[in-house]
Amino acid sequence: MQGFDRNLFSGRTIVVTGAGRGIGAAVARAFLATGGRVVAHAGRTLEHAEADLLADLDPAHRERLVLLTEDLGTPAGGARLARQIVPLLDGRLDVLVNNAGTMLGRVPAETVDTAQYDAVLDLNIRQVVALTTALLPALKAGREPAIVNTTSISARIGGSPGSSLYSASKAFISTWTRALARELAPDGIRVNAVSPGTIMTDFHRRYSSREKLDATAAAIPLKRLGTPEDCAPSYLFLASGLLSGYITGQVIEVNGGQLMI
Image (cartoon, rainbow, N blue to C red):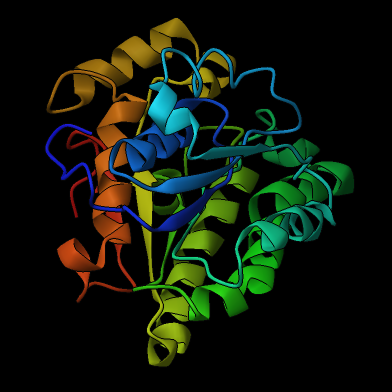
């Protein structure tokens, strides 16, 4: 990873969810490039991992990568994934990146029903809490352990029409990050989050029109949309005790100036 020591995470074990494509894939590749052993949840299947996570991956990096699949869009998905991960850890986990999550479609507020509400909560909240809870014993035994959650600019600005459930679920993640940071500090576990702005991934290809994306890019001070690679360094920074050992309970906004606070 350009700009980071290639051995920054040597000897460390990192779990990344939602790593099959987009931001998660870029984050997993960045940890591999800096020496980490990565347990990557690639999604329900390995369909997207070949194109994003594994494409042109250095063979030496591939040797330190373990790929898992699980449907996190179900209430028990996080617990099932944890049961796959725990035997791989030898009792110790150094970094957990809770990245899996999405909008599942734009839903006008007046049409929200119980099924849509539960679907967003299952993926964006329940599985994150369940997985983190199950992995806390291993994190407590980790070396300078850290949790890095993925929230969203929508958590602060409310998103655009049809994203009320998604935006609110990400606001939960932001607040939960701060609460966990305070609670887990005595155990030496730092907890922070990365809040991407408009990043050009499949998320926006599915849920935003070309016209909307062009207008957004024009309004961003840096005059472009972000890329997954723009986001990955913030995860490395927050996961490293060397680089951010006195930072916990924070949310880093990565948005090209789209939101300044």
